[in-house]
Structures are given as C-alpha cells and as structure tokens.
Picture (cartoon, rainbow, N blue to C red):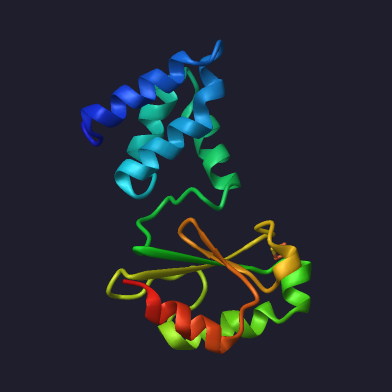
Length: 156
Ligand code: FES
C-alpha cells in the first residue's frame, strides 16, 4: 500500500503469516496500520480487506466496534474518560466537564491545534481507582479537577 512504509508492510506480512486463517490477523494488522497512519481512512480499510480476504464491510464494522481505532485523524494526546458505573458514581461527569472547559472542546472533538482529542469510553479496567482516564497508553486514576490540571501541565 502506498500509504504505509515498507517496514510496516513487512511487519504486517509477518503478522498474517502467524495465523492459520488470514482473517484472524485483523486486529493486530489494524493496529499496525493505525500506528503508521495515525487513523484508519477508507483506503486503509480497503487494503486491509484485500490482504486478509475480507470485505470492506467486515473490516469497517470491526473497526467501529473498538474505541481504540480511529476513523478520523485525532490529536497528539487522546484523552479517554471512563463513563462506566464505578467511575460515574465517583464523579467522572465532573471530570469530563472540567476537561471540556479546560480544553474548550466537547467529547468527540479535537482542539484546533491538534494537541488533544477528548472521548468518553466504557470501562478501562481501573474501576477500583475510579474515576479513571487514559491518555494514549497511560492510565490515570483517582482523578480530581486539580489532578487533571496537573496531568495536563505535565504533558510535553
Ligand atoms: S468503570 Fe471506570 S474503569 Fe471501570
């Protein structure tokens, strides 16, 4: 695929070769493509479908199921606030509102400078430390508005 590097394509072919059935490689292949492009445009899904003998729809519906896959470009920092029961009961709504005010965007949006994308997600597995959020691959818990400000300030 012209969109991705030869190195990523090699990695993808290695992943596909690990599975007896090509379609089983779908999630790890999507992950590599997204790492490479930052998101998953239609063109990339079509290519993945070709590689794995799937239809575009097979790939697109899988992608739409997982909040970790992005169909549009996202910010450098993707803030995902958990809205599930434990976090909700421990004040995740106030944390979301605080973040929306601080960043000047609503959930689902990206700041004009491309630095932050804000999303609400289901349980991220940190219920005992609610309320929790994830920024890219780092978890933050026991959140308060003050702690959120501290975290935002600490990001390079
Ligand atoms: S409910 Fe928020 S991490 Fe599980």
